[in-house]
Image 1 (cartoon, rainbow, N blue to C red):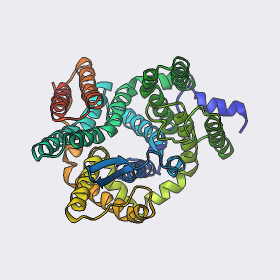
Image 2: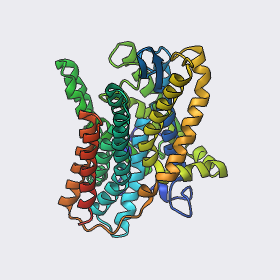
Image 3: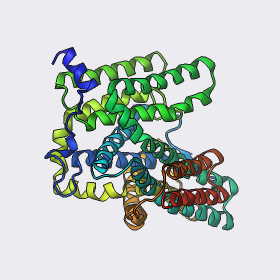
Image 4: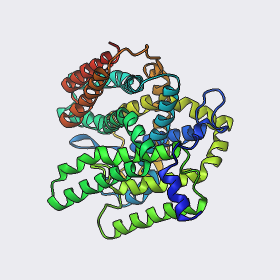
Length: 433
């Protein structure tokens, strides 16, 4: 394929190519792309296991301490190249959102209907999780647990919630961005990418680190937009050589930025705030995904793999919201047993610590699975037909976002959790009136 043909495919013809999700590779029963569902399930599993690996606890004469085992660990930066799946997660989110939105419009639905559905699906399970976190912190404080440990537990719980807020905003803007994508696909994604680069340049030039948080919008919206290209077939229409060269080019450029010190080689560090390095990671991951999609589709049909995917897909947000409480409970129980029995806990990154990691990760996976099985009713509950106006739907998004920002900025405490639950309930009520 020559350059002109490649540009035609990226910029798009007058009518977008047929959507891959409507082809024979989709599940006949649900119309879902099972290969993409498998990728999403894999991303969720990686996130859970990564956070489990990072969750550490030590006990000294001063008492228990919750630690991040990745801090200062030489092994973590190389590992981050394999476990940084958030760019891929947003690409897949853009793919799935695009397919769902187009199907909804085909059935006569509106952008407000789509937005209301996303608010319901994302925020309803959050009400229970945040409420339970606040209750748990209250019980710890009442039980005499030192205040600093309670604060640390609340901080650790709240850290992953950035994803809920950002994903909510990305999905809320999806109908508008789909419309822009259909009119000018290349200009729209390049405009978002350019904004992300401009923010990074501004942050570096001024030294104002806070400006980097503008990329909580631009970086993740760009990656969601990349998912639209995957959904409408433009990327799959490119030949293998183009995809391979694109992926290798992104990795080479990324390595160059690491060597020059532009970005940290620890890809997890590039999350807070998100840097354009994640755009290059997303391009490489998406190129690889496009290359292996036929293989993934075949794998997704295997009964055991399909069983895992079918379990995770309708429980994705529940798993994400509850895996950290599970890990905190495991850490607290480990510290309690160690103090009660006098057992010395292995130092993070030591040989003994690594020997215990398979058991630790296995227990974390089993307990998170059990929590998802028991607590997914909210995420799976069908939403009544939405009757909200566009203004009320926008207010719902803002209320949900305010709840997440409150927990991230002030930390998760009994009071902030109670306030966040109230905001989440307001958001859910806004889409039903």
